[in-house]
Length: 270
Ligand SMILES: C[S@@+](CC[C@H](N)C(=O)[O-])C[C@H]1O[C@@H](n2cnc3c(N)ncnc32)[C@H](O)[C@@H]1O
Image 1 (spheres, protein in one colour):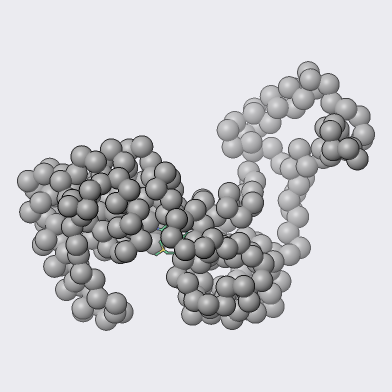
Image 2 (cartoon, rainbow, N blue to C red):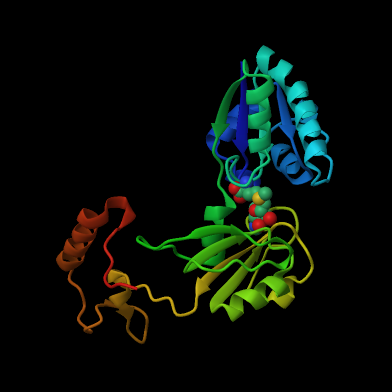
């Protein structure tokens, strides 16, 4: 039958997708690689369905390969006889342990069918949690910044695995970035923190990311020309003239033609 890789989202039980929840409910066994993913899965399945896997905390590739072979050997017979799920936080295809399992199953148990249920990744959840908008036309690069590393280059970056925020911050500020940190975003376990100050999160917590944007970055959207009056009650164009309903509709149609759902029109350039 099938091994499903199920993305659980960032950590709140109701951010599991409808499809993910259905797969978990139908699965004979739900394997989890860690404590947090196990806790989220337990909101949707009985503890008796959880299958435990043992992963050593090591970077030794030989030991890791042996552990994944062992995990695949445990999972494969159950996935041949029925449906099983392997859960990961976020999305199974973004910096995830599921990749190791998929490669090991492909190599040693090619008869097992695989299907992936995408999850809400921290790559997208961060934007809402931190009040960031990635506007149409803007770029966003994904990097890792473990052990105080400060990758630089792109105008905007999301940095995963920020384990030493003060050290990472120093390098980013030196390279001209504004940085905001997000810890345990949309997560039930632990405290959620969003801050510009690395001192607030100097204690190591693996579930920490950063959003870095070049401080001189200028992005103008057509709608950035709107502003409210002093009471904040009226929407005006930058010329101070209130837009009539038909003018607003025409503007929206023009933006729709230019970019459809992606709102591709840019009122200016960088
Ligand atoms: C191994 S990656 C897993 C990413 C996951 N597969 C996803 O799609 O979100 C773990 C890193 O993702 C980031 N991360 C994942 N979930 C997070 C959350 N809820 N809040 C903040 N950072 C998170 C952290 O930087 C963490 O070190």
